[in-house]
Amino acid sequence: MVTPSTRLVGLSHRRMQWQGFTMALLAAIFWGLSGVSAQRLFMTYHASAGWLVTVRMGISGFLILLVTAWRQGIGVVWHPWRSRQWRLQLIIFGIVGLFAVQYSYLAAIQDGNAASATLLQYTGPALITLYLIIRKRARPSYRQFTAVGLSLFGTWLLVSNGRFNSLHIPLGGLIWGLLSAVTLAFYTLYPGRLLQRWGSSVIVGWGMVIGSCTSQFIFPIWQGPRSWWPWTAWVFVAFVVLVGTLLAFWLYLASLNYIEPGPASVITSAEPLVATAASMMWLGVHLDNIQAVGALAIVSAVVILALRQPSLS
Image 1 (cartoon, rainbow, N blue to C red):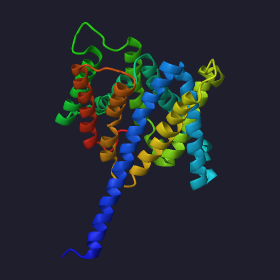
Image 2: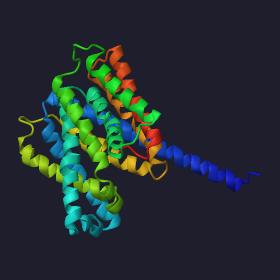
Image 3: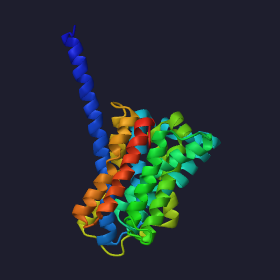
């Protein structure tokens, strides 16, 4: 017999699930629009990828640590630095993980476009699957084989438009996009113990600060805009930093309080679709029909892997 209290519990559970789905979807939308906003900064205001990485990671990382200290205490924020082992792992994650993935992704946008850069980066889960299969010397399952095959086939269609003797995105955008997929795989696989021990907000916050400091040495913040930008340019910068990084990160983590990581990862695979649609409508980026098929193949591969694995990010 279904009692009123049981019905209320069921409604409450469904409401929480929808809340989690909405948060994860908003995170994907903000991530996708962030890449398009970065492309607008590169195209219209001649910003550099390195300068934007320094600003984006520095401000976002500082704010994440500030909020974490306010909610959990300042001691929680400094704990990872008290051990040489954790310090070294944190520095490696910040430089080889976060800085590398952020810069290669924005450089792929600068040399190509947000749509192709996001799609190429989303081949990262297939690289992770290949790595784990090789490392464990395991026979790939039908699901894994299909996903990796779709990802490789989709990438070929995207960059070649189905022709063996042509390249339909700039070479620089292709190289940086593939590098962003490799660094995304490292960023996903490496910090497992760090995240389990200290929590995602502390590790990602410090990783962004370390990555920003690294970027500052290579791309100093004072070597930014050569002329005074209009207020519209700073709106795009604020959107990339506050909405496309800080708010999107918080929404994704908050969604995990209501839904499992697998479904959350499936929902956030909407990011390349959002970036592609926004690029086409807003920036005039054009994908041929065959390239569009390639884009769908890449997204399908991510969904297939996310349905089986606990998390992709």
